[in-house]
Length: 423
Image (cartoon, rainbow, N blue to C red; front, side):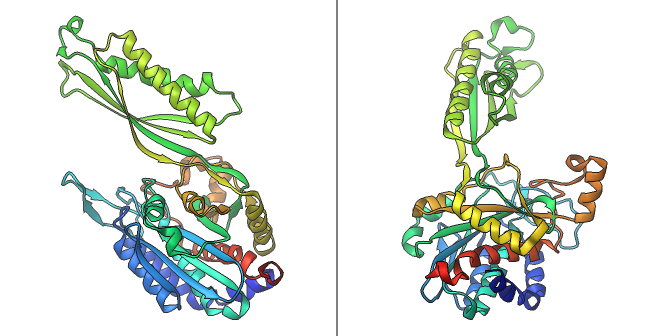
């Protein structure tokens, strides 16, 4: 396989300039979830030029490209396309100045603050290289470009729009994500890799009154404050120290002025867990605590709970992860690592779940290696290296793109390029 991968990737130099241009174009023109029309069109056009059978508009803006190349395994590689409502502050010459109008008529900035432009470009590059070296592998390669990962809706939308009928059933699904590790880094992890995520909106009810007469009120601000403090004990006092979880209250809204006690407060929470039992335990604890604080304060109404979004845990299957890790070790050498457990979340696993097939999902680095090394030397990585979703998040063009293309290609050829396994 390593010889096959090196043969296919020898063509990377011929497409590198095009891929760098594509990446900078995508970065300059980000699109929010389910609005990725321009991005999807560019991906579809590239696939068609390379000879893929292309289906567009799956789950809204999703794209499927299929390249059948004889008998052998079917390998699907997935890239997400959407950006975030963040105002870019990278200072790059190709920085985004894009804005969109939201449902309330407000103008929002848009930025590729999570590296999905890297993912799209890498999959386009991998698809082109495989198409240009068909004599070196056998099987079917499926390039899937998914919309709306950031809100957890895109994978489900593609599945509900007939994904399993519109694509060959893969033997394995592959995906990757750029993270703030040094560019050139690749990291695999068997088993739990990314957390499940649940976002909730909680409304607690009180009785409004004049700020000068708190005795006439049931103050929902105080209830909300008590809830926030008590929720900090869920992880620290209800879970074992060896059980990872995160409970974050990211938003509180209550009241309209300093001398008016409102009649309600709204909290928005985010929960990260790694298995169903812990997920259930934490969500149940949140509801118990909120209800108890409301009852203790004499709230006139039961609190309300609304699920805003949910992401499944990303749990890599052992066998495909081992196979990819071995292939990475051969090709990348000392740049191949075991990546740490991450508290970020993804909806990608719903795609292999719909087909009932195994998957593996890995990390690549995107930070300037010298900058990362200097921050590591000073012990200031957390302070000096921008992370995903930061307005300053800006993967260096190279070697990030070369690594992303190479990792997808090497991983795909771990199935497609091995004649014994393909048989």
